[in-house]
Length: 464
Image (cartoon, rainbow, N blue to C red; front, top):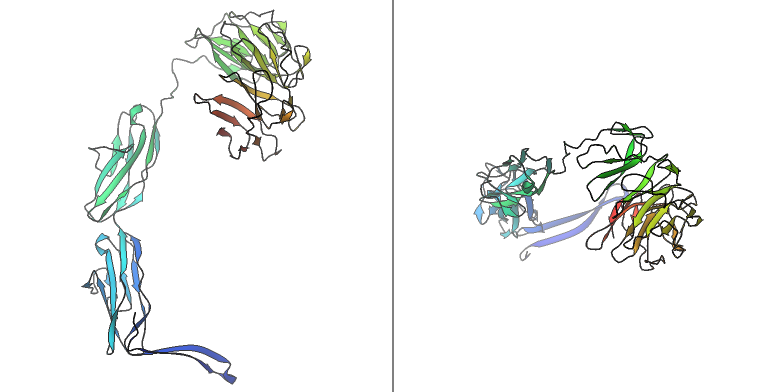
């Protein structure tokens, strides 16, 4: 603002004992001069907005506030229209606009710059909440608002307007899969519009099949950890149990497609099963911690015929647990675990068998130590290009550092282009076993386990 015609003086004054105290003084003479100006602001509906100025002059002066050039008067939600502070209480959309103040005295007057009041009207105080429902159930999505009436509502689903849904609450009945999605509501009045946060409605289609209930498992830990479906629809079940579907079954059993027990299938194992693979020819590969299978000595690995009898031509043997089995396109069998020998030869955690169970002597990548010094291989996945994904609790693979996950070429040599790394925080920084690997149709790889870091990311389930 111009200070033409205004005299402004500043100085310091000393006083007190021995002039020990001093202070700054400033005086004006003439027309008013602004020291501070009112500032623009944004308010939610129902709150108070305050505008104020500081003016310098030694002469008395008056104030007059204006909104959009119209004189304001005290009353209603307006207070201080003729003072240095203007208060607009319980503001609503109609209070929005440009506010100025004219300050005057006998020497002249001065007008402030425009301070704009923006009022968010309408406003949402409670957002619609995401919800989960089962098919056939009902759901109510609602919003709580404040605003100058009348308020109008328009619900949207997945970005598409729901033409007949124009109330504060949206009620959906007899829910189906097609009702799942993101719902939001647009609230409007004469002053503006506001869009709610999107609420996710999930319609759960993964409901239990009430017709499928083979019964409990019991004994030996009473756990089912393996399920595999045969080409004929029958279901192989493995784990640590001594009874299955009410009958004596040690570690392995089979269900008919309708969930009833296949009583003709009962090979039995004297230890827990960790791996179960149904071959294309109907035979069944079994791995675990057992030393007996089908009543015969089979150390940690064996194969059953389709009827559950033991395939006596297949008995490679391992000196410790077998955790994973995978069949390649050429019929060769990948074996992973915590063993040191397989098929009578040294193999550290990983080996490959020919289709007849003899050892593939050309395949010996080897895995090395976890935190205890003994490697343990978990998942083995054969990619469509023949490369082999390997997961577990190892720290070396193929003689090179690999923490928990690595990839081999089809001939067993290490794929040097693949090293995502995993890591843990507790109890051992480099002990971070990978428990599962899945290759998506687009070639990306899902990784799950107890790690807390992988390739710079964090979490127990990641994608690389």
